[in-house]
Length: 173
Image (cartoon, rainbow, N blue to C red):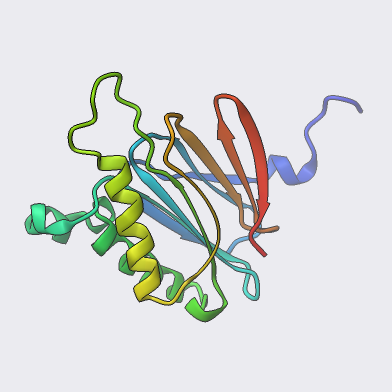
C-alpha cells in the first residue's frame, strides 16, 4: 500500500547523539544521528566487516581547558573524545585498521566576528588526532557557514549529510 511504512522502518532504532556525546552500534536496525553541527565537529566511524558504526559530537579541540570536565565527559573534546570513540568501537568488534572515517562541522556560525575560531580549531584538532591514530578519512564537510546534520545507517554504512541548502549521501563501506 502506498504511503505505508516499510517493515524495516518500523523496527529502526534511532540513537540521537547530543552535544559532547558519542554512541556506537552494531545492530542492523540502528541509525546514529546528530543534529545541527555548527562549530562542533561530528566524527563518523564505520567498520563494514562487522557492520559497526560510531558517531561522536565534540565541542572543543583541547581538554587542557578543563581536565576535570574531560574526565567526566570525554566526548566534549577532540583529544579525549576520539580515543573514547575508538575504545567503544572496539567493544562492538570494530578494528581501527578497517574503519572508515567521515568528519563534518567546524563551521563559523556566529553572526559577528569569530574571535575564538572554535569551528576551525575543532577541525584542525580532529584531523590531527585522526592522523596520529593513522585513520582512513574517506571524506569531510568542514568549515563554511552552515550547520550539518548526520545520519549513519549501521546496516548499510550509508551516511546522510543534511545542510540547509543540500542533502547528500556517502558510502562509508
